[in-house]
Amino acid sequence: MITPTRSIAPDRALLSVSAQILLQLEEPRTVSQTWGRLKAWRTENGYGSPIPFGWFVLALDMLYAIDAVALIDDILMRRPVDVA
Image (cartoon, rainbow, N blue to C red; front, side):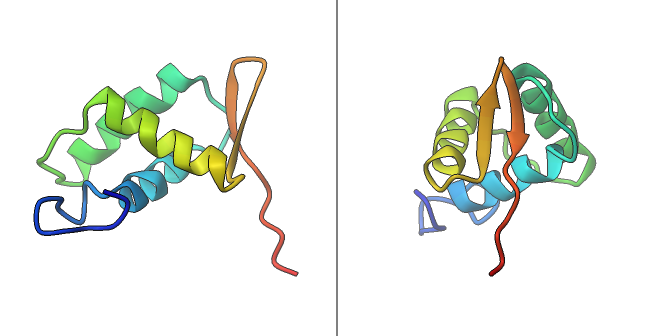
């Protein structure tokens, strides 16, 4: 589920979807805006398999668990990366 398996394609694994979500957060957005942008981005970039909203939420949960995103006043934003 987190990584690709025989039953989960690489473009649908939570790691892949999480990375695609981070690409949409070049600036802070609402969850709805991020969801819409992710769907549009996947269509523009030839990802044929649709992502259900529940899968999107699981990917957001994973990003939150690893402290990659924050939700402040209903705005979703990337957290800065500490490369020390």
